[in-house]
Each structure stands twice: as C-alpha cells, then as structure tokens.
Length: 325
Image (cartoon, rainbow, N blue to C red; front, side):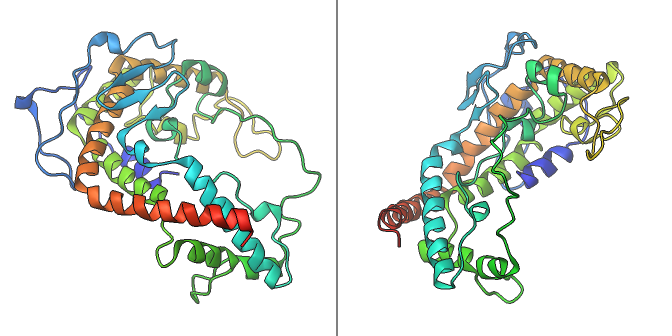
C-alpha cells in the first residue's frame, strides 16, 4: 500500500527544525519537484494544537481533517466514491463469472473481490498516532474483527485450469477472464478514477515529505525520540526495525515476529508523545492538503475527464449487475 508514499517518508533526512511549521512569506522556499513557485502557505499552528498525547488527534484546518478514530480527509478525497468502486468491482465479478462459465469452469469465491480497492490507512503513511492503540499493539496493525471460518482453505478451488483461465499472462499479453472483464467494462482505458487519484496522491505525498516544514518537524520528532534513547531518522523507521519489534520476547512457533513486547510498546508510546510535541501529524496533514489543492488545479482537466469516464463506467456496471451480463 502506498509504496511511493512510504518510500518518500523513508527518504526524509534529518535536519535542524523547530517545534512547529514556519509559515511566513519571507521564509518560503522553492516548491518540490513537480510543483512550481514556492512552498504553499498553510494556516499557522499554535502550541496548543499538539494537545494531550493521551487523547486522539482531533484536528481540522486548511482543507485537512484528522479525526479521533485515526481517519483523515484531504482535498483529493472529494473525487473518490468507494460506493462507485464497489459497484465496478461487482460488475467485473459478474463478467468474470460469465467468462469462466463459457470455459466450463466456476469462479471460486476466493477470487471474487467484495469491497474494491481501499486507500491506505493514515498510520501507514504517517506512522502511529493513537496512544490507546500503541499501548496494546505497539507498532502492529490493530487486529480486525475475526471472520468466521469457512470450513475449507480459500484456495481449494483454485486449480491450475482455473488459474490459467482467470489470470492474465503479462508476458504474452493474453488476458484471462479477470482482464477481459476489466476490458469489457472499461474499454481501452480500464483505469478507474480511484487509480488516477491515487497516482496524484502519491505525487503530493512525495512533495509533502520533501517540504522544508515537514522535514523540520520530522527532525524535531527525531530529536525528541533520541532523548529517550531511540535513534530514528523518520516516523516510519521504528515500525520497520525488526530489532525493536517484540524486543525481549521469543518468537512463537509458526510466527515471523514476537508479539508486541513492553520494550516495543514503550518506544511506540514515546513515538506518539514526540509526534504530538512536534505537531507532526497536523503539520503533515496541512501540507498534504495544500499540495493536493495545487495538484487539483494543475490536473483539473485530467480529473474532470476521469470523472466523466467513471460516471459512464458506473452506469454500465449497474446495468451489468442488474441483467447479469
């Protein structure tokens, strides 16, 4: 998820910083690659915006919303309808099923997508930020509700014949039933509006983590962590440090890592505290929103065209779902 965004975060280097973002015109620096002019303006943050680290971030400003449940809304989100994406996925399933039936095969449930693509959770991009969660899970993803067992392995029905019929072959260019379904629904351009938005979001995230104000905030976070004995250059580094994850506990049989240990949880708690002192999440959200507004202006025609294409695709998908073909 968000591979480019993650690489952008991991590439952030340390530099001297302040406890919050500077926003004076005299301090403006050239915008990162892909954006013209200087770094975009953002509303000023006051020290109180950091808040109590024991309470979730609850912030709104400059086109960015960060909610106590850890979710986030930025300007590009206005272009994405997950309902539309689910409708397209359902139609692709219908078309793929018909294609498989024509070949005398059945499409296994394990190959039928239910919900469509999902954007990465904010903590995947910005690092841990919920004190309540890290006190239980450390740097691990909070456990979802367990799903009822189906009584069989999900890939029992995915035979070699099913694989050949369903999956595309990139080397030969042959389309399987999955590719044919996408092609039939999307024509020569099966790219969805979600994909377009994700590409633009990746570009804005790269700019966000090159912005001098975010670099300074990351440096402040890093210095705060170092005072407690943790030497990390950026907020994603601890979650990828295998010497920290589960430190001091044995690896259970069949697992790849120990469970969250007191040492890991202590680091994650310090991490959240340092993020709040540095106002890292609020700063990154504000600057991400600023770059998203810029790219919406730059790519207005592309977004409008993608919206029109998406509307037609959804209308076709609804007909396919209704008629079964």
